[in-house]
Length: 401
Image (cartoon, rainbow, N blue to C red; front, top):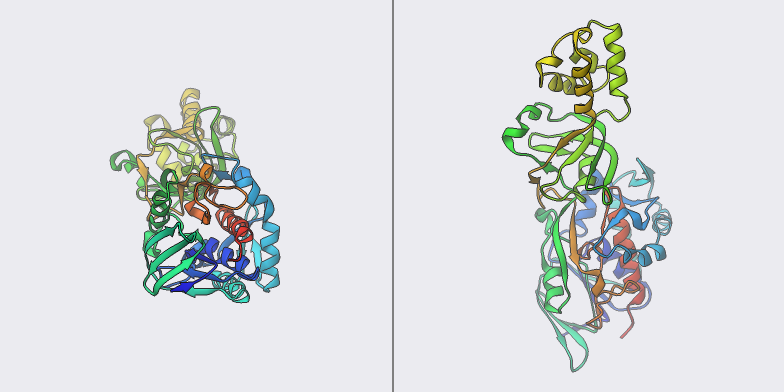
């Protein structure tokens, strides 16, 4: 039997960071993962450069059924703390947009940093190594884990197995099954930060815009719960993607509409009225000076009233065109699902966990960290910051046997 102070299941961002913190505090730590590649989600994130945190992260950038839970961990390990670690390892990075920090060279630098930190703590890592079963032995207050490499025993078990997003890199429901086995409730899971899809026939007029990107204002929800983002939108063959849509997808509820302003920087009624007084060009041509040409063509084709010279158009027709572009309402039929989702919304109910340590309230020595927990960040480095912060909180709380 292999004995450790703590076993961490999951060699991703949260698991590796937690292991390094606990190992450097003198604990005997084992990390196991069923996947061959370590930290694959870090490797593919940010176009291979890992958007590893957001300089401006606050609890307001996170979704949860229990919104205040994340405050404690996020306050005790901040973006500044992680940046200091990155700098200590000499990793060059840059800010791309709205506080988003990326490695200059490669996400691989970040993975090597985490492995070096684990090495400094004498952490043992078994990979690939599948877990077949987990038991708690009341007699000696220890967890027993049946694995590909034999029986493991430890008084503390950390579940850092991530969510359901991107199954091709090994995502599974393992963490949720462990939570259920030990009686922890789950919040309903669904894909988050995911492209939205539309019915084929209804989307046909817009499929021609596939590949077009433009800045928009996007919103969803009723007055009190309305969420709004100003980001870039991308038209696809099946629907909408891009940062604006990924952000709003985490707040969108099936069957409800999105509202889009396709020209947020332009006063369209004023610009079209001015064009009418000065120009004899076709409406589509005038519109192309205000929004991308392909978008202008697609919209002008939607009504005969918009296919004439702008000076011959009625004020009512131009007002309707401006309204249509600045308040485009449409209801998605679904999402691209977990295969394209960057994160999983929902997960282990945080009301069942200690916000100080991430330990289960009903089960001593059992911890849940990272994406498996019902805390989901916005697009832009926030989910990695939750991985670091929850991993740190747990790593600090673990004790030597």
